[in-house]
Length: 335
Image (tube, rainbow, N blue to C red; front, top):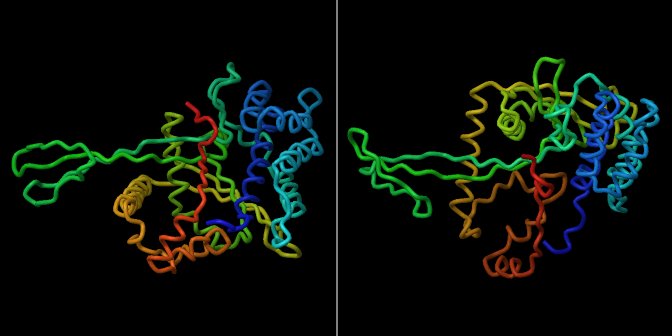
């Protein structure tokens, strides 16, 4: 929608993810001693100019110091392009700076090594900001006698296995995302790490990840990419702004495990979700309105004027909307 203003929560989260990536790169260089890998992937993630500024704070030859680690993280923040908004007193550069320092001071250096595909090849994959793109294919069938025909846009075959005759077809969809970190946990298993920023890290926030399909899907993506079973994850929550005079911690590490039935639940949820798109993609005016989403991402949805308008108003609003494209795989997808 035009004139919708800045999405401060998303902008702040993006800037902080640059901080999280810089901290992992520091760990990879100094404690895992993969300095050539660090240089290559630092440039890949930040671009040559930003990486030159950030890497100037990494002590490649002199060894670790807390001051260097802090400086590396803060340089990633300062060069992210994030700036204050007069209408938002919570997501400020100063508050992001304070949160970054808390994150750095509590990062478990050298304890959970970052996954590296080939230690001899600096250009090989490492487990930092890993974009992925998967094609999920679902095979469906219905008895011909039911009178239900396969969707005309999907190729189908007629199969006879005894009686009755069955229509069989496949539907494929892309599942894309970006994993913040892939780590070896305590030398025992691989895990996905997912960084989150939030206004509060209370019990409700923690419980939301027990069934999070995003976390489950990332484990599936990691398993395919690594060709190894990944069923563990850690969600790292960082509160912005940091709590003042509160017993609650401003940083939470939440370990999670998924069991086989939860992976099956993910695929059922995924298929059910894309069927909503299939049904209404040619006629968005008849799509159901899920009003529990009207205040997601910490601000009112800017599509509310469209949703409450009558048909004439909706048609007019559509002509005024501006294109906006974004994808977590804008960067090069890892092989």
